Amino acid sequence: NALITDPQRLALGVNVPKLIHTPMPVPIAQPFLEIDENTHTIHRVSFRQASDVLSKGKPDGVASCEIRVQVAGVLPVDPELCPIVYIRGKAFSITYTALQVGMTVYYFARWINTRGVPGPWTLVVIAIIR
Image 1 (tube, rainbow, N blue to C red):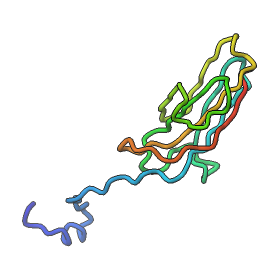
Image 2 (tube, helix red, strand yellow; image 1 turned 180 degrees about the vertical axis):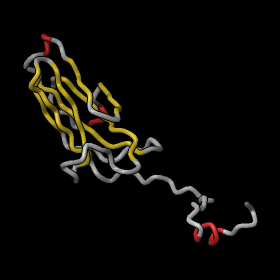
Image 3 (cartoon, rainbow, N blue to C red; image 1 turned 120 degrees about the vertical axis):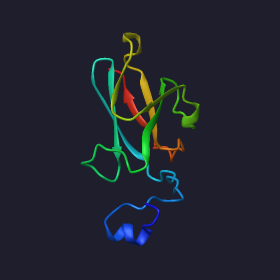
């Protein structure tokens, strides 16, 4: 109703629509990346907020986690140069081949907000294909 003012709406407990939308900030925290390498040729990749050990959720304003992976070779100096990219909202598994058993895998991750803007990369997480 156009005759009701915003203060009156608030007094009635009605939400007042924002006229200007506040953009989601760029994530400042890094995700905590965990690789379970105990299953033959399978890495179970999970991530969570580093600041909350009990949480499996993403921080507010975050849509997904970008994970880059390099199999074998030397430690990458730039995650952007890693050839495989996963953008996921929840944990997932990567299945490797029997020929890759014994190879080192380098994982990097960062949060992506709801506007698609990435935050900082994690330090490398190293796992072995078993």
